[in-house]
Length: 460
Ligand code: ARG
Image 1 (tube, rainbow, N blue to C red):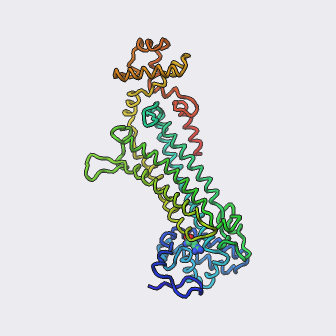
Image 2: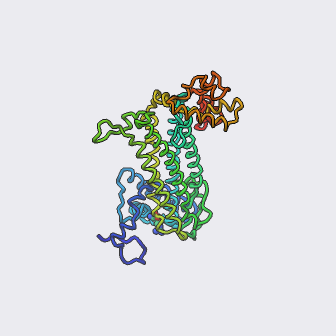
Image 3: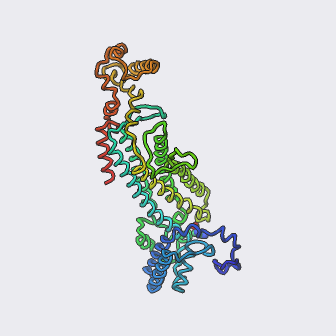
């Protein structure tokens, strides 16, 4: 199959069909079409505004571009490999629709500043969508935390029982990670919101364009000061994938915990049928596929970040075709993060139930109140390190005797140290152990109540 010729009359023959396929990005950059149309409309208006083309031609161009938008939305615009990319596909169709005016659209523009404009417009939208999703995720975390202020959960370091926590406190840790993600995306939005349009192929243009005009039309808050930088900068995309990777890190940690909690060994949560799956052979199984997939997809997003970093590192200025490879990384990064935030929001909102019975008995079955015994003595004037060593010995003998700290008699306590009194029992009860940690940022119930209010205020 021979291809129609795309290039100027410098070229005598069309591309080899396999090379045409290899070269084409239409298979994926069609994703940019709405932004390409919007960008072209702004460019056309600028050409009219500056008198570079006739206003009558601008009108024709806008009508043609809006017609293509309608055709695309109706599923009637499906360019093939012969169009090479979305930019050529649109220009070709435009010329079919409006004739010679269509051939003027590319005046004072290159596909290099055009594609840079398109991906910034695309990413701006997607960043806002993801920020909206993060807000929903945070709201679900807050709702869940509200229900579980006084629900205890074992707290771990090294995945060994450390000190018991308010479950709300544990959930709020994820709220704050998401808060940073939301803020970070806001900062990246600001740097993405800069217009390269008018940078031309690399050096600017001979036409009296007005870059501020087209930037304003597109809602950009600034324009690139240097045309070479304008066409070849992908920092914003790398920053986005970095932020996306961190979102995935946070979701993946929560996923890992959810998976552990759902295991028989922990049994801290049960999975609702709407968010769990079965096994094709083991009829008893209920699998946490949702958090497993989120954990698994995390690697993909890291991979896209790595791909873009490597893509950029050796590129000479300005545009190089390598840059066509940025798109699939960006698109898949966006899609993956969006899907994962949505799935985790549903999972937390309606897919799990905390097993308060299990959580309560878990915190009553361990030595995670040992620090509180040392704190008890330290508060009575025993130097902390001395108290720490003393309690270490108590834990050792209790373990050997198959006892917990709460099982020791008052005489036994007083043999360890005369400072122990009846109130030691209250001091080491899990609810008290949690309640007592009222330092700012701590897990004490009153502190957590306040933290919830502060978190709620962040969403306002
Ligand atoms: N499809 C190309 C890309 O995605 C558009 C820019 C092409 N520019 C060029 N000079 N060949 O990067």
